[in-house]
Image 1: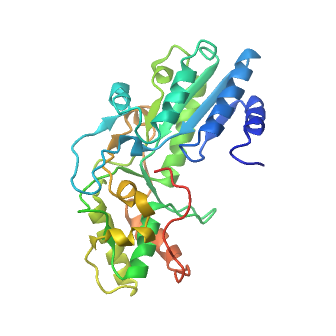
Image 2: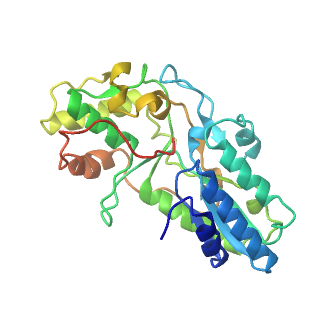
Amino acid sequence: MGDLNDKDLIAKHTQQADIIFHTAPADHLPSIEAIIHGVKARAKEGKETNFIHTSETSVLDDNAHGAFKSEKIYHDSVPSEIDSVPDNAPHRKIDLTIVNAKNSELLKGRAKVAIMIPPLIYGFNPNHARLSIQIPTLTRWALKHGYAAHAGKGLAVESNIHVLDLARGYVVLLHAMEKAKYRDELLANPYFFCETTVDNEPSWKEVAGVIGEGLSTAGRIEDTSPREMPEELYKDGFGEYTGAVIGLNSRSRANRLRALGWKPVEKDWRSFLEDELPQILKEDHSSFEGYAGVAAS
């Protein structure tokens, strides 16, 4: 137990672990530096490590802010496509820190390193009753203002993944890493996307439409038509980052996990109407003033 900035503590526990998952905020450099320090210490002791870091597909953000749908699709089986994004793209600094450490002489043959890059996460896990971030926040915004909204024109598109399918993706990836030889292509390319079917890639305007219909059916709002969110009300969304968080184009294809036998099996957007919305409607929204937590986006 500790704080993400407790570098010595994180490094200590890293040195004791054969398998490491980093699922904390994707832009927290001190915790990554601590893990790398621990992995290198293990390598010096002759110990091998499996390390999976969690990034996020906003690294592919094109600053559309909802203005258009991009036709650009990134494939994890073509690492040069991912490496083509600017070094100052969201999360890229951390990703490059990990890639550079992976390629160091010390860790060659001693550390198997991968970067999981999930897109928009949705879904509900009854075991811990947690919700995801973007869509529930938009739903709470709609409950407060009486209509569902999108950033800009709402035309941008982001791939998505159910949280339980993503969890299975980590398991499949870990088992493949454990079996792989260091010279295998699996380990040469560190990037892994994890997304649902190509047909399930709605625009942010379409997402808002589903929210509006769900809340109308529940008798909580009258207007089902999605509208553009006024910038002065971004404060009830994601603040100054609203245009980036719910207005980006970020389209990815998980070719590599599928090649390992993984496939998504959970609900599509029915998940929101059947699982997530009922939980949100139980909440007290009287004091809702936007998302105040740390979001990877």
